[in-house]
Image 1 (cartoon, rainbow, N blue to C red):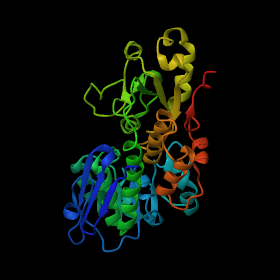
Image 2: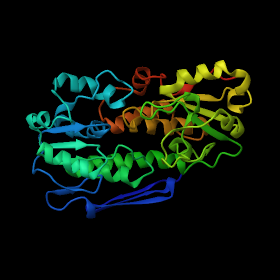
Image 3: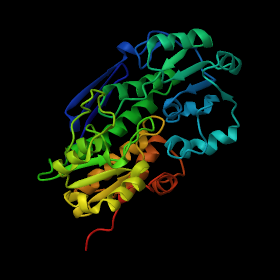
Image 4: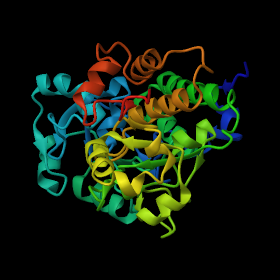
Length: 368
């Protein structure tokens, strides 16, 4: 079995993800200079000697903080955080913990509320640098940017984990996350061959709550396909919006004729209903005829669910490459949850049952 090479040195971390054929050079060069740390947008942020109070605002900020012990230092919450939307994975796993703390709510649009909260630092997923600087000026405390849009195939994802580790004084935890993620992905990619005679289609995707017909909401840059070496029936977004989901049309799906379909959990009920209501037309698609239609964990909901995405990568691999791994999917999913949330009592089964779609599995019973 091939292995990934992960080398971590105090000053430089060189991560070789052989599975993606990419060498990530994660250096200290842009991460620190005394009490100044670069954030995910490349801004040099002067941070306090000691951070005892954190506010995480906007999508994915609290999720990233929750991967670290720094979650204990969160003293107030963005008003847009939810204790009930379990399609946000961090909400389900950390919700009870945060609810018990009875933290006050803060509206990021109100500088007065942020100032009155008296936090030491704000973690923000704001994209525009000038707006980030404006937030920092208005709040009167350092604002450290994260990137809510990066994926596991981007060096920026691993760099921001390391930068947060530096910020929180949890460098070893950051490297544990980086190494763990890459080892899981590399174990898949390094040990499978391209799938001959099979094309995959992903649908039911959610992005900014958009999508006309969920069956036609797809992505040409779906990492579970990339790491399983499964040909995607569709290219990157032709509108030039990168890898984000986009709408295609039924004629194109029929023409491309995927042999296997994966449906995002958030759209699984709608997609099944659409297939059942259009059986005559959709029987021209091999995946529909053979009932090779599977659902996955919710991928996008108020940003990327990174835990779910890694689980989806393993699930798709286990379906496309049956019997080629020395691990059982549900045990692997449990391990992934433990990687991001060490010691949590939440299992994959708990998380799957709490989210729309009910987790990974076949949409239809296998044909007899």
